[in-house]
Amino acid sequence: MRELTIESILSRVDELPEVPQIAFKAIQLLNNPDTQVSHLAEVISSDQALTAKLLRLCNSAFYGLARKVTTISEAVMIVGFSSIKSLVLMITTQTTMNKGLLGYKIGPGEFWTHSIGAAEVSRVLGQMIDYPEPEECFIAGLIHDIGKMVLNQYALPEVYKATNLHLKSQIPLYEAEKAILGFDHAAIGGALTEQWNFPPVLVESIRRHHTFESYYENGVLHPLPLIVATANLLVDLFHEKGEARQKFLAHEALISEVLDIDEAYLPELLPDLQRRVEETSQLAMLIS
Image 1 (spheres, one colour):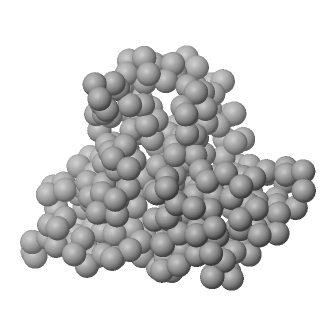
Image 2 (cartoon, rainbow, N blue to C red):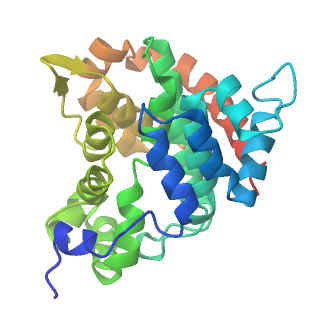
């Protein structure tokens, strides 16, 4: 078997697979708090398809704006930088994420469904604890599994073996990946977003979405990695996956302490989360 490392794979990845250069540049600008609205608008407006889709989403009933926005500058000023970042990322990843991941035996549409679900649940959990930037939660949830896209493209034979090991032995997929590759999709996803200079807390949210490791900034527990890890489990609980409930129970004490969610609250919480995910999924349908 060939030996692959995170470094050797990342040396072949320049950007998110199949995301146009204009869109990728826009995402980088949106990650910079010093970016001027006029510069961002100029970059986005140079891509007619991206501009049209972004304006369509901003003018949808989901946002309920008092008046129709007709330019990107207006959209950024009215909807806000954070929401525009979420929308641009959603637009630019939808086509790629909607495809199947052959090595993981994930059919067309399944990866996107899980990703958009984790994104919206992350946003709701952030709102529940008054997280200052709920859109940051959405973004972290949307791309938490980006490592799967990378491995499926650059390590397909190894992904096949890991998936088969996972199905045969019933060990978690990320543990099967570690057994075959020496690292998992969360590790390479974290390394990739770190290479892109994403904020450290977003990087760690991707890196820790299976491990429930606490993440501290300046000595204070930062909740975003736990939000994303919990959202990932709750989306699986929509489908009554037994291993998700077992893992929730294993980490219930930490989840309850930070997010104020315990098992007794799930019957009330899950239907509301499913409704919110359905609303966001309907918004995403306007992209195509």
